[in-house]
Image (cartoon, rainbow, N blue to C red):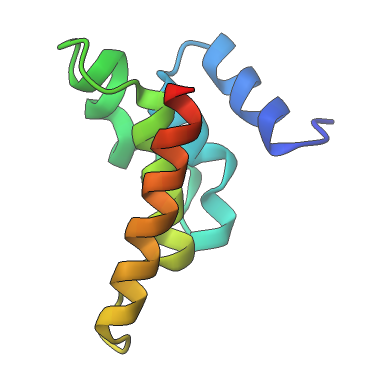
Length: 97
C-alpha cells in the first residue's frame, strides 16, 4: 500500500500517466474527484502542456491541487482568489529555485 501522496503520484507516473495527471490523481480525494475525473482533467497538461515543453506538468498539476484546496468558488470573496495566487506564486518560486 502506498503511504504518501508522493508515493501515489510516483506510482501513477511510472504506470504511464503524465506528471500533471499523477499529481492531481494523488490529491483527488481532497476535491472529491473520482480517479477518472482527476486523470481526464489533467491529461492535456502533460509534457509541458500538450508536449509544448512549457510549464512542467508537475507544476500545473500542483496549481490544480492548490485551486481545489484554496480556490475561489461561487460562495467565496476575492480575498480567496488572492490567497490562491499567493500560494501559486510560492509553488512556482520553489520549483524555480
